[in-house]
Length: 297
Image 1 (tube, rainbow, N blue to C red):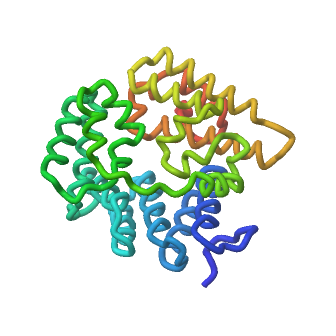
Image 2 (cartoon, rainbow, N blue to C red; image 1 turned 60 degrees about the vertical axis):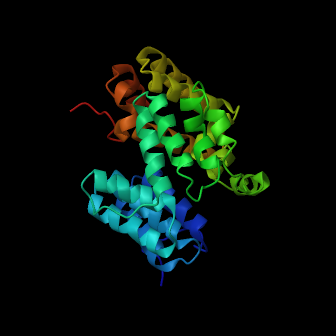
């Protein structure tokens, strides 16, 4: 069965699906076509099909189609039970888009810790983790609770490092696998993509100027420092502009990054504190004319 949208390259596996859907959603704004591709892949592409279903749920949730997003996350979980799919289902339930799933305890713990960290209550987040560990469940690897987001939130909390050391060490795939995948990624010439392929938060560890500028912007947003966030977003845009070359594909990747960043600022609740900044809105409008982001009515 052929995919619903023509592609310049044959679709062989989930990575091909991801690249085509990304191209449609962020570069050409053919959002419905991107959703069609992922919907088709969720049914027909065997390579990590649960991930295609999860990606479908993510795009549907961005479009406000909560019940459809819940169904896609649920299908992902049915194919291969995993924490990401369950976390997505929990998010949709919280927004009124589905029934409450029966989540493994560690998924619920992570969601509660994240909520406390976002509320700037690291002691509460640590108390949740400590209670969970002391209940002696079948523990996941420590990397789940040592990820950069929690490490930043709990770095000053007494006992956090010691508690992590009591958790088992999970096997992490060799870094060269991610580097090989990153070498063929369409954004690979614009920023350091490999850490994102491993886990989005780990991209903060990169010294690449685009990654570093985005890290500083996110840090300013987390602190509620609007003035510094405005400056860091400007630096982020300048770092991207320095990646422009005579290569049309690389320039398209720069635009894709700007569109993705602008879309996040416009829609993700994390950026609420800076979303009304006239300076940030102006930078996004000027970088992405005709995108519909922050256009004056």
